[in-house]
Length: 324
Image 1: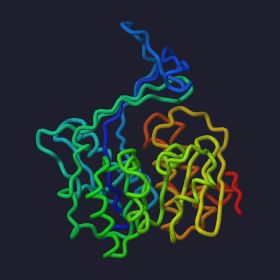
Image 2 (image 1 turned 45 degrees about the horizontal axis):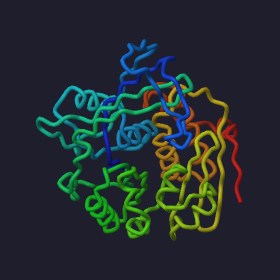
Image 3 (image 1 turned 60 degrees about the vertical axis):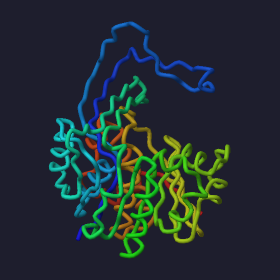
């Protein structure tokens, strides 16, 4: 029996950082910033880092570091990047018996072009991670207290089967959906949300899921909340909003130097859920999630800064929090 099983993507990551990566507002993007390179030029790279990533492996690393017996369901190719992922999981003492290795398949690969301000553009080759199927689920082996689900490439059949199994076995479900799931819309996802205990979204994902143009998190929450659901909506440096049917919390952030924002969402969500699984209250759990995310964004690589121990009560009080 595991404490936690994560499910989703696993990737080999390469971080390229350069002062030559220019941020330029483009009208074609609605005035949003674009990361620009001169076509045909040769660009000097100031820093390079190799790591592993993907929502399933990043979140599993947090759970394992904080003392939970953890396994992972994901797909890898039988290639060097896949071996790198397995080696990283072994380093965190994460069980790999539920991983499916695809013969002649290619592990997902990401190249992260990191600008001087820590923002990045990600070039993604999805490989076998885009091919999750119901064959990846061996329900008889999914014996756990909690399932932490991340992106499944929009595979609704797999997601529904996972939720059905969790309901039958009284397994807690935490869900950090990817774009492939969110694009199905709120009506299609409603039967799933009714069996989810923790839902983690960022502000843009919440707007996309509800099809509401507003940035008012209270209004978004009215459409997203379900009975027994704890909803988290993160808003970058402005912190995270948390809702239940009766209560609201806002946890702020500190002035942490941003090296790379990659993995911040995985770090926050998994540490928050880990704290709840340990029996912590909402205030402590939100602060622990924030501390994990702040530590992760202070490094290149989504696993380098993951907390190795539980923060002290004194350290937690340094994180600003309000509640209603």
